[in-house]
Image (cartoon, rainbow, N blue to C red; front, side, top):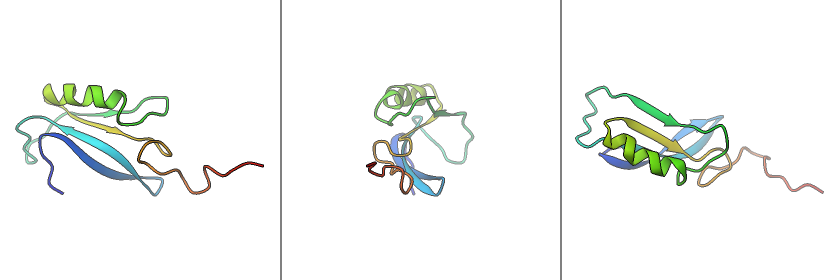
Length: 88
């Protein structure tokens, strides 16, 4: 995977499920250098197109790496098997 400055669509595993995320990298990003990183995780379920879409570009502009992601069962991230069973 080639990462570039700005927004990059990524996936990563959580509980064996591939979660969808957006990884924001600063201008002039160099993979051989070290950067401070922020994971945009809210105490409430969120999708990467909400708060992370606002903070990601701003944090990247300030030189940080920022990861925003869709929580399990939200946005582009699937739910755990059986999580959304229909109740009767």
